[in-house]
Image (cartoon, rainbow, N blue to C red; front, side, top):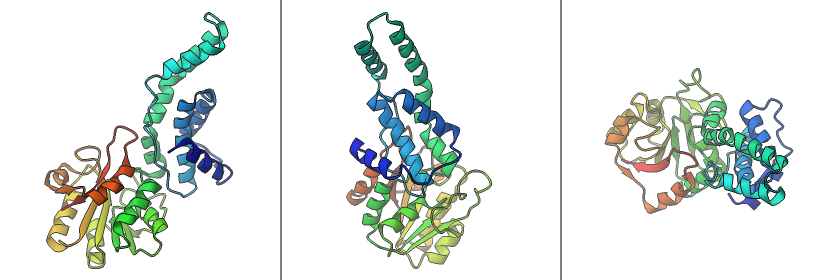
Amino acid sequence: MNPRKLKKIKKQFHKEHTVVHKSSYIQQLEQYGELFSDFSKIKFLINNALLNDRLLRSGLLPQPLPKMLLPDDTQDIIFKQINSKYPQGDPTGDQLWNKYTAALPKLDELLRNFRDYLEDTYGMWSYTNSSFTNALSKYLNGTPVLEIMAGNGYISKGLRNSNPHQTIYTTDSQEWVTENETGKHPVTSIEKLDAIAAIDKYGNEVQYVIMSWAPDKGDQDWQVLQYLRKNYPDIKFLVVGEQNGATDSKAFWNNAQLSQPEDLQKVNQYLKTFDLIDEQIYLVK
């Protein structure tokens, strides 16, 4: 996101949806934002995290993120800036240097853990940003869609925002509600159905089934793929996840036939990784 757009969105939501109880994570980021206010590259990363947290708290989808990693030359930038203001050996400059460099490891850890914060706070596993859902909406071109294992419904929410007239069935078994934040923060209407039951109910009414970040424990995703192949071979199956990584079962990845046609690659460009997880969207057969 370019700085001008970031500033505009930040200003737009500055006074909306005031949060009374901020998490320790956000409070720490705000403190580091004040500490590093003179360093634009660092402040840019912090502001991205704070802005997108504010958007989610407002019931909106977040914006795409840059790489949430401190630049490799961060210490050089700090050193040069301090040297430009204080002569070598000045105790004030030395104190600032010590203060900044002591804070960098913790700030780096916070930025790297932004996805963990989203999972723990909002039950958001895939980083479903508004640019991604807008592009996905164009790809789907208004065709009827079933989302299974929808969690809190972020993908369906974004699709409904992009095309209010599109038929979208949003379903989830809600079996994870007692274990984590999945299902506790629905952002759209969600029907309580497990994946197979949802396909049985809506399979003859949709052209696409969407599944995002299926658990890497169990093999329900593999069962879904077999069921679609056998009973609904004409349905197009879209899957968001990290191949052979943080999402989905080994059985699924070992048996799925993955493709990313050119029009789907245009959607995938908005799932650029901001951390170590390389999630992508695939057409699966």
